[in-house]
Length: 461
Image (cartoon, rainbow, N blue to C red; front, top):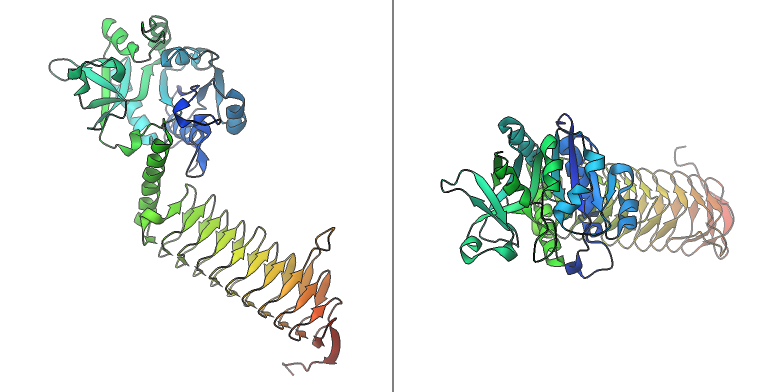
């Protein structure tokens, strides 16, 4: 997902509250740095805020401030809440960074599934109505600890939000919940925050008290109501994190399917945001597509395949294999049980058999790599046959060395290529050869160590 805003709002600033300890995660790591679909929670929230407002958000940090700063970098402006005294207190600390904006959008760093378009609708609602506050609410029978929204007798005006711990039995039965996403009138909110009084039981300044302050000021509070429970998942425990992971996977796989991708079993398919998949590709069960991976059209991936930060061409079949930081051209077949490690490049029309491994190497177009083989630090030309059991012995105990194999060469089964070494074009090695010296073009080398025993005829003559 791009960080560029879709429809920026003029002079709006988002404030993301991310200072809490997250004790219910039972982790040394700050809650907002736990991973969701391959990215920290706070990274999702910053992307949402940036796309919604078109401005760099303010992130209020406290617990674990330094690792959060390091993880976020320059994508946010930071405000430090050294002592955590509630959500209202947290927003107060953002004033120096956000004052002057006509609208202030406030979200939480543990709500990574909000949609930018939802926040834009919230901003539109506040702008159109002139309300002091526009807030997002959810109608649900599962309160998940959210506060209850109190309306007037006609059910129209929002009068207050009561936190769940303070609710009466009648209030606990209310199905309209406060999600925790707000848009405030920027000219009103900073003074109003100073009028919040600490909660008598907890000594904290609750942001929700602004609703009653707005009503007392004669200002309107408007609610944007959603029934999308997934969007409103707040993460307090690892159970919540798993719920959010499932929800985000559903969202991602649904969009790919609407774009023309067949996903045989979405429940067992893991696709991270940022993955691109071409139309008419089929993704089979238990497949993981990670990072900035791109899959072309008319491919079949899986089952049980794991592809990380790799570029896959069109009409490629990858069966029960792992691909990492690699490039695979069109019309390639890989697997089952093969492994492309970082730096592998497989040319168009090539075949990588079962239990094969390629690392930092190029396998040329139309080449065939048999099973139980290893290519490390090698450059293999076009239409080369790599026999079963072939190994490039690329490490001499001190450094890695390269192997070069020319076009149309034939490497016999169980050949050991002791790098640095070159096998020329149209050259051949016998089965079991241990090649320690270069093999010239169009010659046959056999034995241990391998010796050139004869010149080969030119097949084109």
